[in-house]
Length: 352
Image 1 (tube, rainbow, N blue to C red):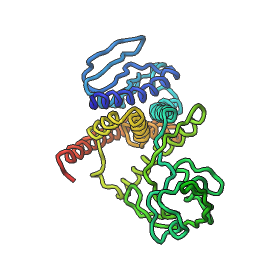
Image 2 (cartoon, one colour; image 1 turned 135 degrees about the horizontal axis):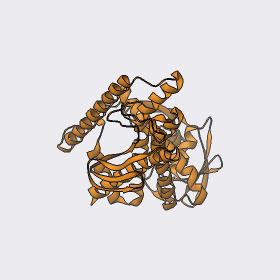
Image 3 (cartoon, rainbow, N blue to C red; image 1 turned 90 degrees about the vertical axis):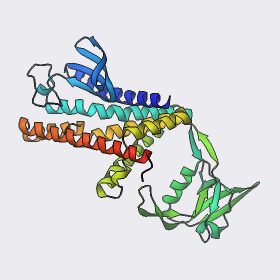
Image 4 (cartoon, helix red, strand yellow; image 1 turned 60 degrees about the vertical axis):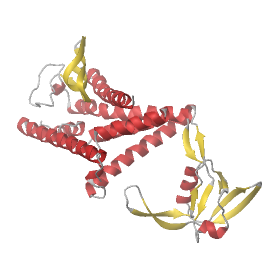
């Protein structure tokens, strides 16, 4: 069941991405010849208007085939009015951007749904207090509840962390201990820690950790919009930073996962519940949007790069150069896909 849900999620994300391209293409009067979910042999197809809608055998992608545009052979063009290649470069760029934009938009809507259903967050109850830390010396104890900092109400541990990180001086903590309310002054100090990439960084801390108690925070109506925007931004930055660390060598290529990992993780999320599934789907959607914007020939970002070149130089790239760059792009992408699948299989059989 988990595998089926994973495939449905991937198909839905691909559909939304290709729908972005489709709607933008039709807006500019470009004929869409094929709208397919999946690659390879078509197992189902139906023609409506000028477009053939299809489900193909391999559910690991999808495509929109526009008249005058062929990723397999970029030299196949058409001079007809409803052709992709006769449109102005800026119009083509919008058509190309529409796919990744649809993925970011989908993630935004999913985060709105998550906000309305409720997000599990750590409650502001203190678990451990590090010895010789500012909190320890000030008299903070395990089990204390942080009510406010400098008069700002603290509802979640996230609120607390942000307030400490942004502090410039001593903070006034209002603490609930038993039936008493205490006011304690604490001056944060800079400490080192390791981030998710294993890098040693510095930030302001007071030496406390959450107890593990959680609360459900719901973002109703218009409050869900800033929440969704923040979560979409955070997901985007996490993926961009991850790619940057991969290029810099901070993250090993062995950590990369492919379609097998996506199916496994999605299946686990679906078993946890709808909120977890929506959250992972939003993250994968953002990931799909970011990756498609990379300036790699055969991806949307590569095509955008070619169109920007045409806008700047006022002439189209050489068909020969365009062809070979696109082929190199496809070889790179297929090699990357095989590499990530190998990583997935290696991890499954017990490799490290």
